[in-house]
Image 1 (cartoon, rainbow, N blue to C red):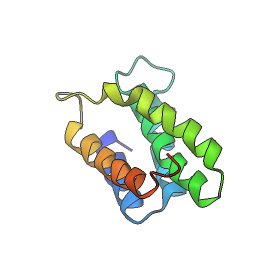
Image 2 (image 1 turned 90 degrees about the vertical axis):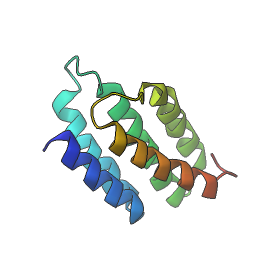
Image 3 (image 1 turned 180 degrees about the vertical axis):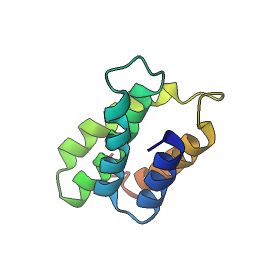
Image 4 (image 1 turned 135 degrees about the vertical axis):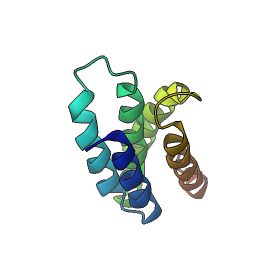
Length: 107
C-alpha cells in the first residue's frame, strides 16, 4: 500500500475512533520504510504513537498514553509544508489535536 492510501485509511480510522486500527494501518506502511532512510519514517512513527495514545486512554492506561503522546509530539516538527502528502498528514494531525482537546485532562 502507498502512503497516500495509508493516510486516507488512517484518517478514516481516526474519524471513526478506531484507534487500534489506525495504529495497525499506519504501522503496516511504516514497516515497509522503517529500515530505510525514507524521510517520513519518523513522522509515520509519531502518527502511530498519536493514534496509540487514544487507544490506551480507552483502555484506562493514561500514564502509557502520555508517554506515547510525547513521541507523537517529538516527531511533529517533521510535519513541514512541502513534504510528501503534507495535506493528508496535516488533516490527520488536526484530528489528533481535536481528540487531545477532548482528553486535555489526561494528555
